[in-house]
Image 1 (cartoon, helix red, strand yellow):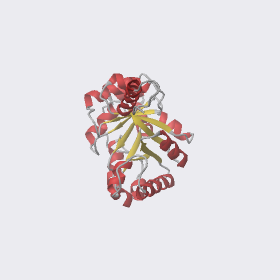
Image 2 (image 1 turned 90 degrees about the vertical axis):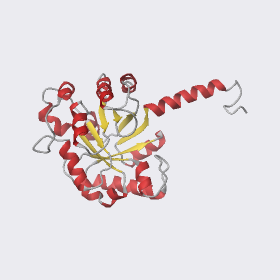
Image 3 (image 1 turned 135 degrees about the horizontal axis):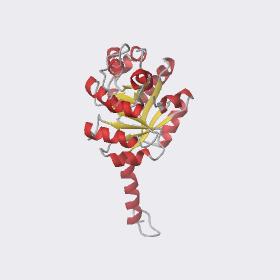
Image 4 (image 1 turned 180 degrees about the horizontal axis):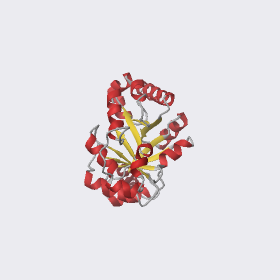
Length: 261
């Protein structure tokens, strides 16, 4: 079976640099995949990506060795199993708020006897290989998103669920849940304390900790703290930032700043 690049990095205690895909297009996904990311996450929770675009984007990523991950819309068995059948090698599940949620997530992502995933890996066989059914449970990565006060209150119960591989922090939702400003990077002190606590408890349970970031310097600092899966930017944000920079420079006359001074 094709190896999971995330697991290989983590076995060496190395951090994975993850890109984020919000544009429902196979060509943009292919362009992103050729830029050297360790993994790319296709975001089906927020934005405009549907199932038809998902399979085409997974095919585009397959032109490289980048590990394909999907953030599903919710803890629902249908879309989780479909994403895996299409060839996702990692699944990020939002709003995991209890031990029961985490147990269901592991169940939906695992074949029996470990779980209750329905059998039908149509494209996954092509991507993973003929022995996919025997090795899928140990190969795919399961990320539970920790992003609410409820999850914080039940954190050890969630992290102790057998079969869970990693957690992924959504700083904005976590901040909102704690009454703080919904930001990725310069989070309020209460949210910063919560993030550090989640990281510490994940390490204690032997799970990989991941987090969403908006800036490179913040992502690097979080890697230094012990995060081993860091998202830095999305295709849409990177495209907008690059285009804005070019336009700003073109609007500036030689010898002037962008503001005209």
